[in-house]
Image (cartoon, rainbow, N blue to C red; front, side, top):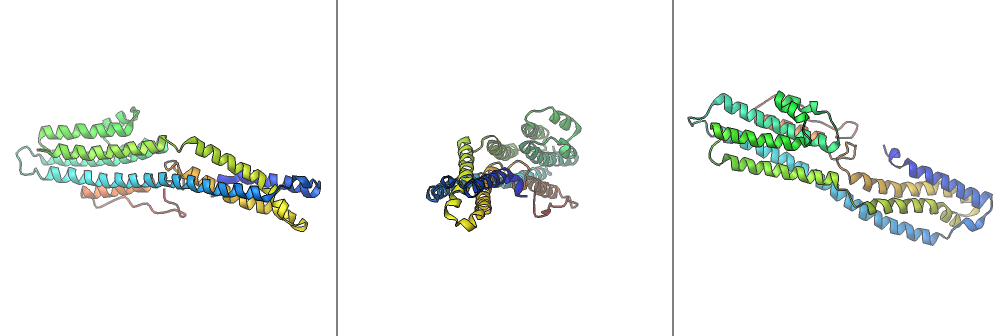
Length: 301
């Protein structure tokens, strides 16, 4: 699982270390062996830079995880408000049981679809059939034509709320609280899209990789200057090992700064959406719920 992330760096390290050994020990160009102290200082500086970059990347990953847990919470609040507000008007003359049940079901199903559409959009996936079962035929066909699919479903939420206010399914100040719940969800959508479209400044990525490669290229020449003649060959495995450490730390930071790419290191959006689906269907009173997703081979997507 790790090698695909760093195979280029390991290949460069192995080739460079072998060439350095051949140059210094076989061709006897002893001047090619460099003092180790400056290379050690470069390694120390690289460690500090990588720590800073990785902390920044993890903060982005944690923010992505937090905002999706907020989406989960806000979705449950929204579903609860839809059910309790509608049920609270059972005693009024305008209340129609069939119309009320249909409103509750369509709103909650659409919210499940919204969470999954947002997940698919963030991951750049196009399998919109995953949400077809939770939308009416007209809504689904219209959704396919929309550029901003999560925004379209939020618009449908708003239209349904005011249609329900007009026919008496919702009354009083119900719409204000439901609109506030939609505003919270839309705000989280905006934060998620910001994380998706605004990466860590490119200079961090460019110069970190540049300095990692510089260290990989210089390291074997420094190791050859401190290893005894009979152990000079150890410069090759040591150089590869140390290069692996720095390369994998650099890759950890690069991967964690993109938490919505459907990789094993990502925030598990599919599992979170399944939990949203289970919780919202339970709010409707359904007892047969889709199973919660569990880790497969140690990974939860």
